[in-house]
Image 1 (cartoon, rainbow, N blue to C red):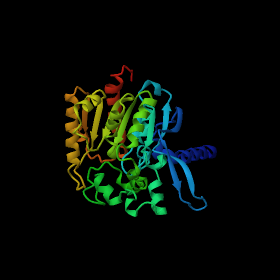
Image 2 (cartoon, rainbow, N blue to C red):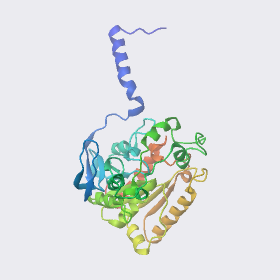
Image 3 (cartoon, one colour):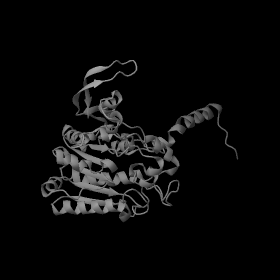
Length: 356
């Protein structure tokens, strides 16, 4: 039996279908996103006197530039004041795009946390993306006042390097049978990978650590989330100034297990969660993921012995299999976000007397 629509009804149905079709992999049935405020700003920065050579139509200059500032973009939901703000910091050769829409077009953690009534702040590390970098050394080499050998190196990651180090599979182009990263969209991840100019930073103290600590103070308390290269940054930022850091979430990185008693005592005052995915021993990388996991497990025990509230969240031990290094982009990313939110509610907001 055929169903016949009146012409006007059929046209309306077709138009509705056409309007909704482009939204189906993006909105995920979540509905409109309503926020109280969004924007961006910079944290920190310092003036530096430079003499810049001529470049194109711009003549040679002598004066000041601003360097070591950290760019931050944010969204605050209507009920954001009920919860501690969350700051996300990306890893090596990446930017805060890490936390936005996933490579296969699903909702990223930045939006997901906002939909869970969390104010979200995304930072670009100093020397990366919108934070910019100090070009002085490159210009001095260009004008001949600095030897070529003293030019800072620029770190970049190849597709092949990322595939194995991010644990997509045992070798390039081959995925694990239970792999959670959306491998069909890996080309979109490759587009996110950008030059890392950390070699231009001061060697004694990465300004990103100072700016992360300052951002926590500016927000009157925040949970700092670091990943990979920045995974231990929240702890290091807390050793710079712990006053604005209410909680620490460190995702997949090596931990410093040689901290002194006073440093551990400082960190023990801040609830800490460390998170690792799957297949830690199943790839050949320039370093051992199992060693990183073991070291971080030791660090968790050090914090506990110092009286701290610390936890290792090893996903396979929870029965969650196949997760890559890019946990926030994996196919089960929302499930993992819920684990973090539940931990924040219990260990950070419960501790500070907030009502989730």
